[in-house]
Amino acid sequence: MVTCPSISIPAIPYLHIYLYQLNTTSQRPAMLCYRKGTWTEEEDSILLSIVNACGPCHWFRVSDMLGTRTAKQCAERYYQHLRPGLNHGPLTSYECFLIDKIILEKGKCWAYIAKQLVNRSENKIKNWWYSRRYKQYRERRGKELDVRYPPSDLESSDIARLVDVPSGQGVTKVSPSSMNFDTTVLEPRSVQRYDRQLSPKEFFLPQSTPRASQNRNISFRSIISTMDFQNAGNADRMSKVQAHMHALPTSAFSQLGSFTTLGPNHHTAQYTFPRYKLK
DNA sequence: AAGGGGCGCAACCGCATCTGC
DNA sequence: TGCAGATGCGGTTGCGCCCCT
Image (cartoon, rainbow, N blue to C red; front, side):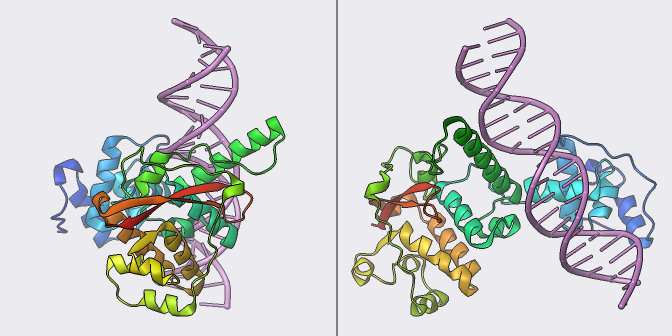
């Protein structure tokens, strides 16, 4: 008899029998009738219970146990919606910027992009991008404007959410003519430094500006610079930087102003990020 | 109040790739 | 090595909510 201590048997009728069958024979239960459309709460909870018991793999077995969905539907539902820790909130401006930059550099590799952003589903990113592209298409077709656009969905609250700062704290949009984006690329020794074990605060010190380091000044500019690590095989390093940033409480920061940059290809989008320093 | 369009999003689909026999 | 099953991935579709007229 197969035991599954982590699941509730009454929630999944005859699950123990299914598990027993599936572990003792290669035969699947009789052909089941699969349905389409929106998942019910009951289906979600059963799917989660099965995955908790068996792990997120062997989706044909999971499908057999659930009984109402195909393996593919189960896998997709889990990875895009039920996976623990998944962030269902709106994409932040910084995340949008990252998406644009990665697409420019590597193309539309949604799975890769999803891995670079913290706990975002591939579908969410894809939906955002196609939705925006469609919006642009409509705007351009209607007004015959040039390709430059300020994304209308980039609100101050989104930017503030990135660093857990209450909405309304000054984030201002700057005209393109006044932009001053530091395109400094980190030198190799900076990359080496990021490879050492550093405290979260050290992590954000701009490596190329000693004075800023002295003042314990941090900015998103330094975070953006870390994207260069991707090209040097340091993709996970940026995630750690982001994670550290997210981990710091609001009270740890005071605002220094903001800086603005065009999107990564310098003619598609305009982003304005707040600059903060550690108190 | 009704209906039509915009929009965000979940879900679907088909092809590609991986894996185990 | 080849095949079939399993899984991954990118693009598309369609549903439902909201807002405007």
